Image (cartoon, rainbow, N blue to C red; front, side, top):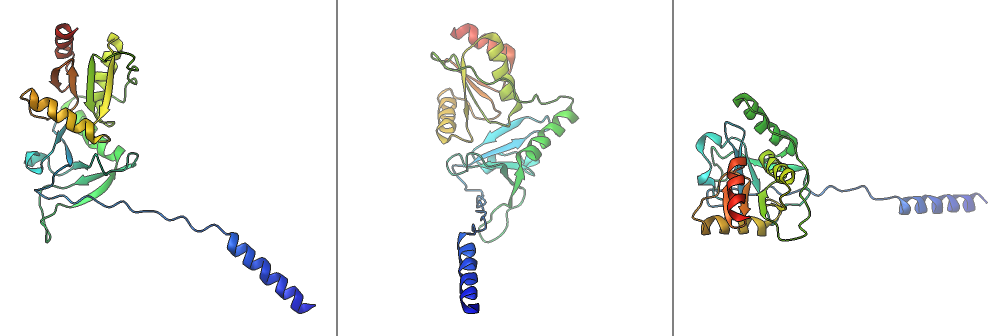
Length: 220
């Protein structure tokens, strides 16, 4: 009888162990490798006024703004990554002359811009109203990013004016980033601040209400 009880107890233990859920594993996200020759990456730097600027080459990032530069790969980066990759582009080191890269929360990265904007005397506006659904051909395309205050300002302004528009995130959509750069190149313009607005073919860099009004007056 004792042997039977031991056998039954062993069976119960085996069943419990077999049914126990395995411990969840956390898949590490590989940090991007950044060198002076890096291609197909987007480098977002913040100026003294707290404005965001996007470059495609390390060399185009101003020396004075290289301490905190967001690095994004619009093709490989996870679409819903809570943290962002941030590089220090002041000094390359190591065998491949790579720049140090670390992760930073989106909130922390945005706070760098907010702090600089406040120091300069302005305040970044929080995310504005969502874009209107493009039932017809939109009058405006806004190329920007989810964390870009001026991008949301532009969207909110167009919505108040009743102008149809769509928003394209150049960090989440590699095609949108290439589309934006191609349009700027065709217009003889160099990429810089975001948002970039396409007003029926008229390209605008940055958000300025008067410039938008003039472009809309010419295009509509």
